Length: 108
Image (cartoon, rainbow, N blue to C red; front, side, top):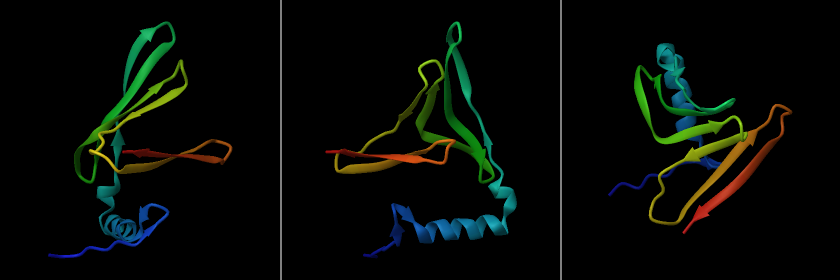
């Protein structure tokens, strides 16, 4: 059995982040991303935008989760699959004024 230990700082696996940066520096074409969004018109100026897939790391990528934005309600909607319990997330939003707000979510 192999034990794996990762250095984590504020929820970020620092070693993985540095390794990814080094790999992308050596292969800059892999760092080229194309994001796609679909927009569904609801009524008048009301629409929903959805982001599910993108092109990156040299191939098409499909997210396990969906990110949506409701412009009329000014809401971000993020759906993700959860495990059976004991899952925790910290979500941060940085606003144009430079302030960042966080929410910690835990499921049992």
